[in-house]
Image 1 (cartoon, rainbow over the protein chains, first blue to last red):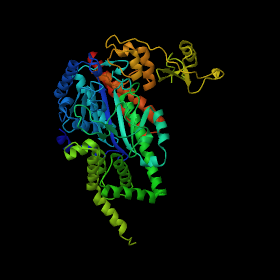
Image 2 (cartoon, rainbow over the protein chains, first blue to last red; image 1 turned 120 degrees about the horizontal axis):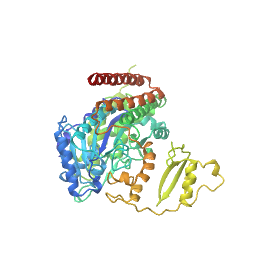
Image 3 (spheres, rainbow over the protein chains, first blue to last red; image 1 turned 90 degrees about the horizontal axis):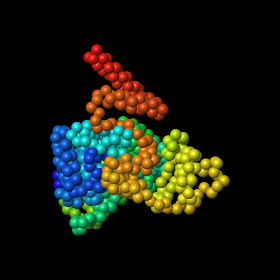
Image 4 (cartoon, one colour; image 1 turned 60 degrees about the vertical axis):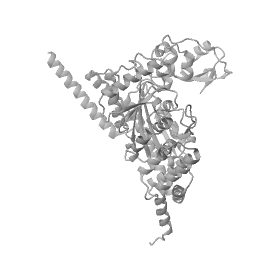
Length: 391
Length: 178
């Protein structure tokens, strides 16, 4: 499967959305359960299949644009599942293999519906930049269409009932991935976390999750990836963030409408973006040489390294991304930088080379991927540095 | 925030109880704190500011695990202890079965316990518009408070449009039935 998906480039990579490049992508998840069934963790095998059949039939009959295909996880191999997790199309509870679910994927991957993870349904959509309203419209239409075909577990007072008490109400989880090297350098992240908490939002540091091989694929090697975790347990503290990447999410799903949740997240994100832009400008004005050095070093590593670990790759990408925004990395495009953020993950590299491999091979291939993209940019930088200034 | 026990007074203290090593926090008013302490006996601990009336007494005592309730959901047989430990339920009926335990948790997690969003059976066009209007009015207040005047202007236009749509709809219905 993965061979076909790897060709399908997610539209959010283009980096053209609002508030890019500080906002890398936005994601909305909508959780729903069918009435008359236990939640998946308490369901029998037969019930799981009955739920699956109802949802897939409903999705097939809706005639959504780019009608999708259903993949039961039992028919996917480990690499396929982790690959979908890295693209954030399925939540971690499905990646981890504890659930007997599946995923309904739109052909253009514009949305995905994870079935029988922690909840019967988890609809997902991603967009580049801060594009929350468009995402919500996409999921809302999908949700309305499904509500015409199936009965949801809904209570007038508590809203949509979910397995986690943290999602009951609207069942809406919004995540915004932010790249904040300026605020990290200014030591301003702790204060920002406090501000976000007052608005019932959380800011997590993004750190890689290591997935060990699970039976029956005992021969598989481990993977380092970023997964979508709706409970937030996989994400780290702000001090644990790798590559200056932070995830802003809503903590509250009950007591406010979907529109209000989106409004507040959008404003918190826009506020952070504004602070980050100011911090970058201050950094450029006060520490120009240090920033130029950081970017040039990162480009040198990216263009010539022969071994590259996951964490090192993230650090290098962060510096180049900062350099690109400040006009210090000529020849780099946001499109490439976004793509590498996705393809430096283990399952993406394995999909690229076409087979499972050990950590050493991953490191070699990751470095090769970076060299392919950055060797020309590094040469340009070196040429610029060697050429004496004529003025 | 309101006291999560009486839901009447303003919560002035955070009451933390430790059950099997897990800390659970409840925002309480002074009256309910006193009642809760009487109920809990010696096994309580305070976090946050100590109320003025009690500063003379020892504020923190050694936490003592309380006996775990063994109530179970009549539908899926999940035990209440597991709900409190994991923050998860196994079936829609759990929400009713553990109402007393879940409601304070929901208030702490979300800041509200009443659903205000969309509903799956909102086929009534007018009901949908009314809810949209209500949401937009709340957002307008927030936008003005946050000094996002451009957004406030857009919201005001949307509110006027919705109001006139609802009025026209009422007039249309009135003439049809009249």
